[in-house]
Image 1 (tube, rainbow, N blue to C red):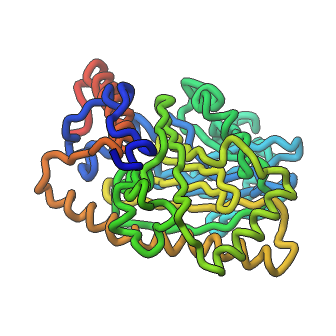
Image 2: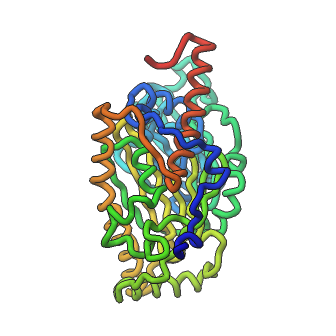
Image 3: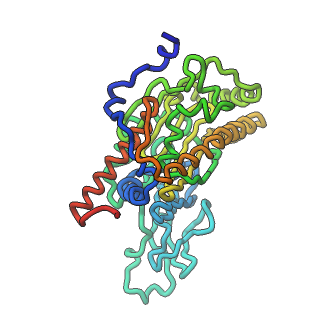
Length: 404
């Protein structure tokens, strides 16, 4: 028996096998009808991360987020009462977007550029020119609010008018673990945004399996593959439906470059100053349903949110979060290096993800295949399939059927 058998289990666990071993239908990874049902069954009813509370540091701070899958633009603002609320970025008079030229800022009020209806931070109508000629009361003319909540410093919204569960219930056992990460206490971040010609699941799946590391990342993947574990497989998987976790394995044979050692040593010292040298979250890679990753690494504490745009296009937002400003040249360099290295690795993934999507789009495959160590991909699909099937069955029961 080689050493790798003692590091990574040779056989799938009973929990993993319970998800099945059959091929997965390929259609849901490119078909428009399936995508439309995913939007209705999942993305319009589930808690979606849209940012971090550090983006709203003071009263009147706001951010704008575009959610193309729902044709929605959201205005998220910290009010004069310090409460963070989310609204549809839509004037209730004639539908004009209140803010269309900025993604963030600070404002005392929000005014529609069309007829100057003006709104308070809590969404209520403050004033409207010649309002006495309307057949309305101001109380009927507030902005449309969207459910919003926070966990581990992260801001979430739920587009369902009456969310079926609270954010705390949705996250379940993951919530306290996520609170133990640097991300929960962060006050700034570095950000990298990309758009890719790939279905959101195809994009997301690339980052929840390590089977590809040896082939796609031969130059940059040394830290996650070695003699004892040539594919860099995780030490363990966890399933907290609908979410997943993996316990990251570290290659003890890896020899980082002098530049990496310098950068990460600086980040390690900075982490020690914040009291985060030994946290429970640093080895846990959280996969939060439907499409958020969160990893509490001391050196690169990051989130990666994948937003669907269409059946074959998605947007990713990768952020590395920090506590404290860049207080020295070495910290500034280290943080820039951390983001540059993350982008470097992701650039190796980009073309292979799009190549996979092009192959699926051809319709040449009726099914795709997942091996034992791609179990997180299988778990995501099963969670998606359950919700789409339930949505379609409900449509059949109420009005005759799903999208055709």
